[in-house]
Image (tube, rainbow, N blue to C red; front, side):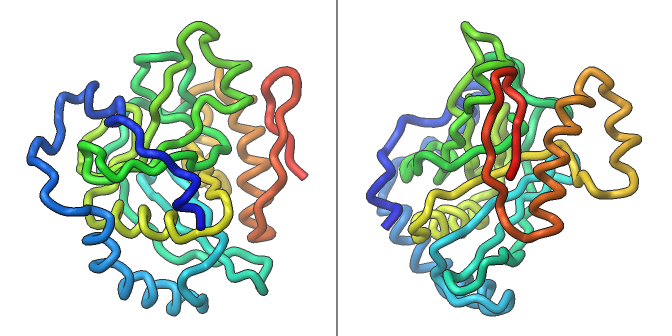
Length: 240
């Protein structure tokens, strides 16, 4: 099970930045309590999408401008992903565009994986995103690109994604139950909407980067399958 691959990690940088945290002592196993509360909810959500819970493969897609956190999943005998649930993002800082240095309060944009679960986060529960990835390491500040980017509970954040405690319990448990690595793709907005070109014009310096992201966005939107993502020498994403 995936849960064996994760280690406990210290509180997210988000808590230190905002100065807000759940200071109450931990009286019980948050994960066990969360599992008891959300398992039947997840079974119903997945059944509504035509899926049996638990599933081996899940995928998260984030739209920063719309403040949407999407949960997608597929069963082993079905190659296409199905949308299970869209959760609102309560807290996201910065503006449209990628994270490039420590302290810029930006939420990254690109193609990542969840690499750790934190059952004792000061934001209830949290999942760490593997920023900086190979592309970020080539394009971000080489000395201080930033780190410790999380999806977490609560409603405030700086550089992370705050989903609220109820949603993070569902996201945490479904991630823990997956048996495959969990990818998460973070986009500035819904990149196939008719209004996207106008949004891109607001940051002309990011258009080349966003055009690359849009190729990956289109790949999944049209095929409902995840592309194989690689990075060239310049830090640009390639898809196949």
